[in-house]
Length: 268
Image (cartoon, rainbow, N blue to C red):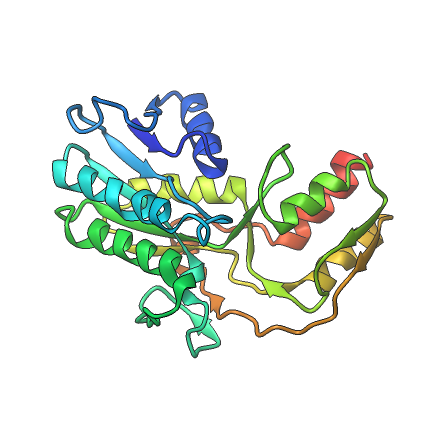
């Protein structure tokens, strides 16, 4: 495979690029403002560029990263396949208990916090309708890892476990999210690149897990976990993982990943 990874310096893009190169693929990691970007053949494009934590403070950069640059790439058309990374966050607020990839999405355009969702949805639309049938969309759930600098709530938790046996968290035990390990996300992206017509695929575990349930895994392995809050916010819809499993990728449940990390890597 000859691949181009946008956002190769980020959390998902860097691991994906490293894995592809380890498998023997030629990977180009363009930097922002690369002058040859729209002039060379890109091969299989993995579009991993985007903003997550600071999207509300940087709305215009969010639109640029999620849709404007993508629009230029799609318009140039110099690629074999385009895999666009979106988010299962697009299901938040939808009035359903479980969401699969066919669910029509509804957003309130007057809500300033919807800039993230709307820009991702526009990126999905360009990928699926303007790429000449060469586009695929990966909606990522909450991705985690324990490598230094990994973002996200569970990642922070796991990193702290290396040096702390008692962990106090600024969250509630009742918060429930779908978590998927970074390695499973990479496997899913590669699978989408090779599938004939995948469309939209949730890269999710298919299971909502509460902080309390994860804390129980920590406690069974010898850690103590305290929560500073006790609220019970509404859970997001459960994102179906059936299509991802149909592509041959079955994500390892978060509690099993955490158990192995604690008992085999830290305690072993």
